Length: 115
Length: 113
Image 1 (cartoon, each protein chain N blue to C red):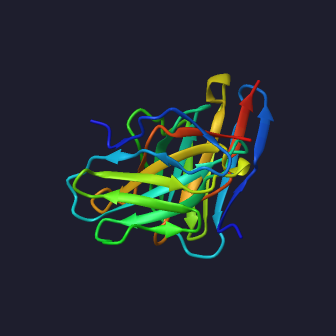
Image 2 (cartoon, helix red, strand yellow):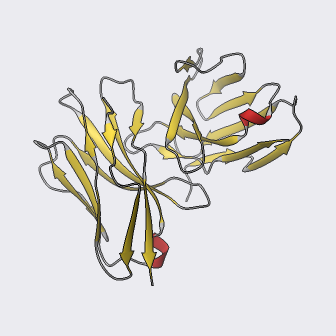
């Protein structure tokens, strides 16, 4: 089974609106971390937000928030007030404590913000 | 500013050439670095884990002799694509493992003619 599943290959959102990018994960570890990265067309991987498995509060970083539902094993990224510069590929990733520090990445979601 | 520096950002070379890519951690000591390969519009595929002072750990299906990894210091790991062929053309990206999160280099776009 895939460890990280991103079911939306592509998403469109109108500028200034909010958008949710889905991510579900599969692990038997009690301790793990969940990450979202943005990859623009230039290729660099930009860290956006982190959620630890023991964190009770949902993580927020500016316009980014992570909707963490542990029982459902989901970690959706919410981007509020979308901007044209948000158009990029977005990856959800998980690092399990038992996996030697390696991160597992989803297949990504390409987000396009329309003016 | 960038905490991981990757060089070069782009390489175009002839088939049969060996290409070295450097990955440096700038603000911290990285005992572990990771090398990924990414095809267009696809996810990152982990190739190997680079361990300072010891041999790299390769993922299944990755040729050790084709992709040589050296991690001679706490701030530098290198990936050498030996005798590169057109099928080795890809985007290669490294990351350094510190505390959360993983820090990535800007990637190297390798094109073999």
